[in-house]
Length: 245
Ligand code: SF4
Picture 1 (cartoon, rainbow, N blue to C red):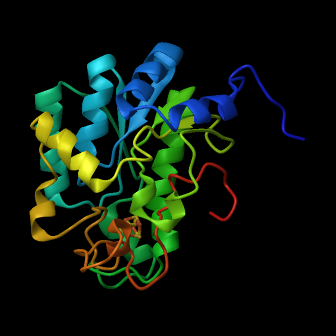
Picture 2: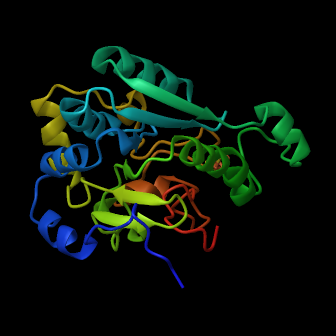
């Protein structure tokens, strides 16, 4: 039976009811007040990453920003991260894959660096492994993440605050109810930059093989440009339990 520990004692049902009617900035503010030094956030430094980071550093300037580097990211992502780091004075904790990116492809029998035959194995080794290492080492009690319900079917059922048995912490998703338009308005209001690949048609930006990220097509959800044609919409790091990984 699942044992409720001191780390997991909040009434998430009541909080979720409140948060459904609350603005994201207020949820971030509440998180900083509730969890203090035990709060961290993740960012992929993707298309709209600046929004949640900006909200977080306004209330907690020294928040730990965990960035998972698979070894296969776009150079533009690294440059975008550096630009935001300088502008917002970020404390970025980069967790890298333990694999040498070229050696991994050889070992895994991946002959084409622009395409992955076994996406699940590559995500497990190069994305989920560093993320789990980050959570084990940093041991946050709460983790802010930028997922939105509008992005994909897999995100529609998410709640604002959920307990993650996999990571042993609360996952808090302040932007859940925001639309792309809401995000755009916030970016405009605060003069925040999009990832540079957005102007080339990318709506969701992950790793650089074409099997993993391609520009979105008309009428698609943002996440449909990821692992297109495979039915996969998530790399796995946002899974709150280990089932199905
Ligand atoms: S998104 Fe693609 S390149 Fe990145 S870890 Fe997953 S399979 Fe590997």
